[in-house]
Length: 275
Ligand SMILES: [Zn+2]
Image (cartoon, rainbow, N blue to C red; front, top):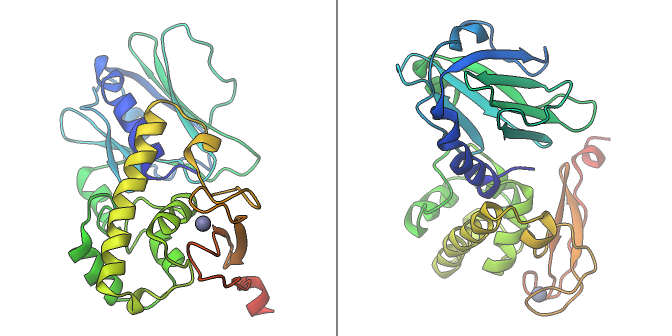
């Protein structure tokens, strides 16, 4: 599930290669993956990308002439790779874009569900599309974070994951950040003390920086995550077995010693509440 560390590492890796040669052909794209039809994919042919940009978990590839932007969102299982000339290519990619030298960027998606998104936009249209995103989580600072927290009463894990509140964090890094900040995933945004807001802002920056540094070295999930997906393993801070709880449609991992003063959190699944 790519979040800021994964998407930013990918952006940095793609920034030079995507502008090395003009685009030969954009497509094919799976019908469920391509989210736009005007401008058409073929409008990219013959143009050159200016580089790779990122907004939250979105990858953006603006063309050098300033007319078009290719948008890619990997959702939970998408994988975007740059394949050099002659490198083996997957048979049925969800999306492929070839460059004049024979290199390509290729999107694949594990599993039968196609959730990743690709689209071609004008700069104005993509700005509008992404206008609802909150500010970038990384290096937001305690003051601004405090204002956003105060404006919206909800549980911290849900808040951190909400792209309209903060852009770039998902469920995995929310778990990592809350452990480092020593805050309960069920804590309420509006009930944090000033010192806790400081801790949360610092944890957002330190965890996202740690993740980015590891992902740039192609570290695996097992190396990158200290608490996420590590049920019953010892907490890396205090050794207490890591606990999990289901909240909405998400599974949260936490340490009851570091984060909840020994309390075990109760499941709060959306589906159960609706029944
Ligand atoms: Zn702990």
